Image 1 (tube, one colour):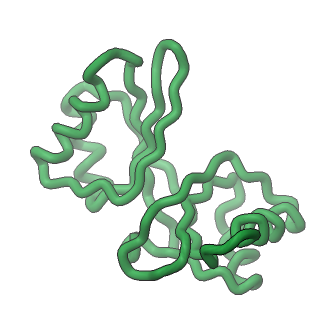
Image 2 (cartoon, rainbow, N blue to C red; image 1 turned 30 degrees about the vertical axis):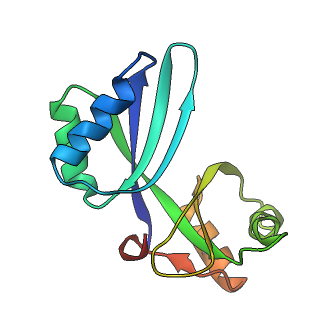
Image 3 (cartoon, one colour; image 1 turned 180 degrees about the vertical axis):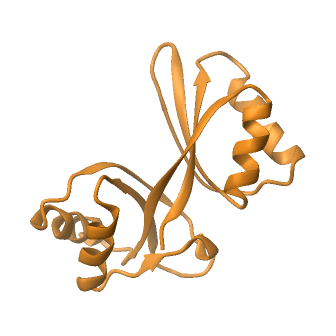
Length: 140
């Protein structure tokens, strides 16, 4: 029902993102979705990958700091207002969004987003009640 997301903390230095993606490539880990945010000293890379447990083990053994977080994948119509409808459903149910990012799904023509909220179960139920399909790991 939920998607496992890997968060990796990278020092904000030249080549660090390459090093991370090269390790994943060398281990046949497919990156399905990615979000990157940075500050002057470090960055947070959020990844949805083909093998979350294996990825976490691999990158930790390469001395990267990483953790797993559960997130929701949501499918929505790719049209003006589609995202606002999803966010409106969450707002009306008093669910705060910590962050979100979009990704390209391989199995549908609609837009896909990853959403992080504190109340995952509640958000899942609210979005389903409003007719938004929940994306499972096998569809990312």
